[in-house]
Structures are given as structure tokens and as C-alpha cells.
Image (cartoon, rainbow, N blue to C red; front, side, top):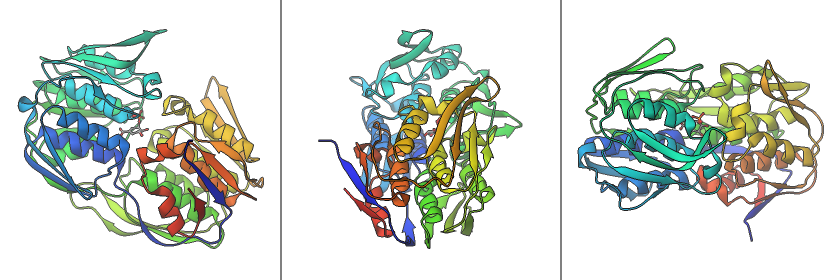
Length: 440
Ligand code: S3P
């Protein structure tokens, strides 16, 4: 039987809580640590299913990756010492693993096959195949109606730098090109249509790379000699997001989420929640030369609807499902425009969230317009009721619907929740520690 949660309307949520390490940063720490010559050590690494896939991939290349609690030690002799893997590399459910490793392997002189689970096998890979082919790598996948799907076969080697204007705002594509460019001789430049998370740039720079942003372009001088470093991964704002919204919408709540990454390319949710009237503060700010971090303090607030679109969307792409839940609790209408990328996540998150929240009585609908692309409209303030809802195998849908359940009258059952280990192992226990009624 698939694992499920039972959630009941809960009293005030309280306390100081830690959230697991940032998923995007953890993947990059493993990759960049394996590229470095020497020993990289990082604390508070996220040891979720997705990040374990990236660790396993490098072990298959002969890189020594040791785990002790949430500390990882990566001992590598640099890229030249990597060995061709004996078999396919299984990226599981992790799009980040597949797309970032495509770029890394584009520079390696051997053939590799990247596979994934049923969900990942449906996700578009043309966006990475196109630039990597332009750099000289051979990248082949399953082709259907012009799109490229996993499994991906990559035959890398002597690649050259590229100047590339990305058609989609995607940090994964940008990172793939930069990781390939880090192994090419000369300047690789990537242009983003809208700014996306810049963890690859930040960590590469911290590890010695000459990499700079000028306007919409990021420029990297290759080949990069990556230096090993000591790192502490900040808490994942995308995981804290569920607790932040819970603290805002459950009456009487007051929560502090400790040591959360607040890189400005990731804090779009906080910007929008403030516009909605959230009582939200960043305290104990710290920025030690690398990723900025802070404690996020929230108190239950009367939220009002907002219109969100444009350049803010990539900045809160993973938080859109939980923002839909906040919008249900707000007064008035919320309109989310240009959210089409949600259709190609671990599941179609527009469909999964509209289906789940509608079953709970929310006034939510999805439309498509020529000017704004995919649009989700929510009329807030409609009381939610408990229902049986389905994650569709998507971790962020599961956690968002669980938070909606805290507000609903009666019990909510969220089905198929094992997927939550993708990004937030221990989510139910953390929510329970805040005071929520959630039973696994
Ligand atoms: C990620 C980038 C985003 C995000 C994903 C993680 C990353 O994907 O949705 O969860 O770590 O670079 P896209 O690059 O597809 O927007």
C-alpha cells in the first residue's frame, strides 16, 4: 500500500525549527567537490533521495564520497582521474541530477547513459541537449514530437566554449552549460531570459573559478581549476516554505525557521508573501563569503490576494504550489501568470494542485492565454473541507496539500507521500513538532 498522511485542522504552530539542507546547493556541492582536486567537506548536506543519486553517480566514477551524519567528505583527484562508469547512471526522480550531470559529462571522454524513473523519463531534455551539442558533445535521447526524453546517451570529450542565449529560464540548463564550459578552453557565456538561482556561479566562484555576471549574461573562463573548500549548506528555503506558509495561515501561530538560505535569486516567495500582508522577518542574517542565510520568523497573518508574474516566477518556481495554498487562505483573488514550467516538473503541478485543492473545496482554476501563457487563478477565503487527495508522486504537491489540510474542516488524507523523501525527509515529524496534527 502507498504511504499516506492523515491531517486534521490544528491549533497554533509554534517553536524554532531547523529545515534540511538546500537541495539545489547540495547537488552542486557534490558535483563541484568531485571536480576539485583534494578534499571537500560540507556540513548540513541534504541526504534526500535526489542528492543520494548524485552521490552514487560520482561513486560510480571512482570518486570517494563518505557520509557521516549530514557531513559529506569528497576526496577526488580532479576530473581527469574520473573513470568511465561501468553501467548506466540511474538519476531516479531527480531532474537536477540528470541535467547537471549531462553538462558535467559533456566534457568527459567516454560514453555514459543517464536513466530515470517513470516521472523523470517524461521530462524534457532537449533544453540541455541543444547547447551541449553546440559545444561538441554527442547527446542522444528518446525523441518524440521534436522533444528529447531520457534515457540520455552522452558521448563527451573535446568540447569548445559557447555563447548561448537560453530560450527558457532554467538554472539547470544554465548550470549544465557552465559545467561543460568549466572543462572547455576559453570563455563560455550564458544569457538568461529571466534571472534564475545562481548557486552554480556562487560555488564555482568560491572554489576559484573566474565567473562573472554582466546584465543578463554569465561569463566563465575555462578550464577551471576547482579548489576544495569547507562548506556549510544553508537550510532549504523551498522546504522552509511549507512551514512558513503554515505559520502564516494557521491562526495564532508563531514559528522561527533556523538558518535558511536567503539567496536573492530564491526569495521570491518571501517578497510575494510580504505583498500579501505576511508578518515575516529575517533575523540573525549571515553571509560568510558564500550563500547568505537567516532565521525566518513568521506570525499568523491576515493575507490578501496578489497578482504574480514575469521575472518573479523563476525566483519562486518551486514555491508556487504552496503559494496556491496561501492564496486559498487569503482574502480576494490571486492570479499567477506565466507558470507553464510547472507542467514539466516531477508531475504537472498545475494539474495536481488544481485537482487536490478543488477536491478540498477551493475556488481554483487553470487557464491559458496567448499573452500570459498558463495562468492559475484562486479566489481566496472559501472554506476548505477535508478530502482524499493525491500527490501524484510529487513531493511538493504532497507537502502543499498537507498544509492545506491544516486549514480544512474535517480530516484530509494525502495519498502517495513517500516521494517527500526526494527533498524533505522528516517533513511529517517536523510539522508534528510544530504542533500540527499529522499522522503517517
Ligand atoms: C533547480 C532549478 C529549477 C527547480 C529545481 C531545482 C536547480 O528547475 O525547479 O527544483 O537546482 O537548478 P529549472 O531549472 O527546470 O527551472
